[in-house]
Length: 115
Image (cartoon, rainbow, N blue to C red; front, side):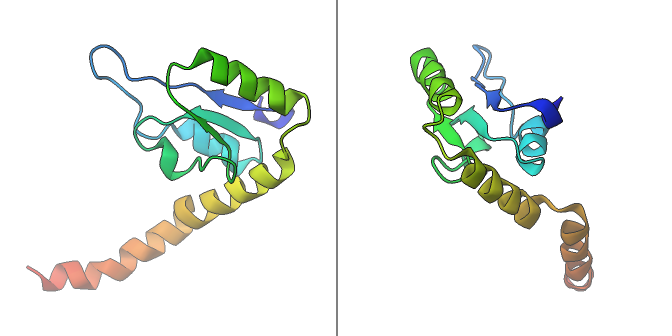
């Protein structure tokens, strides 16, 4: 579905019980596949969705701002190619599995020496 998407919207909110997504994997997947993203500033999302750089970041619960952001993307007022390219680069830099595994392997001697 992401291959056919023009936009991925993740209007996350914190539930009345305090339940919230930490950093939705589906958001990272959309960013990695080059789909421009609109998301809300909940928990870890602002670490990857940097407003105007890697996506459009909104306040949670602001339905008007969400509708406006979607309309701006649909109307061509947003350089979605630039957002998508920056987003993909960020995901590759911060969430690349082989790179993360290598970084963890490099830490193992340090951790074993602290015992």
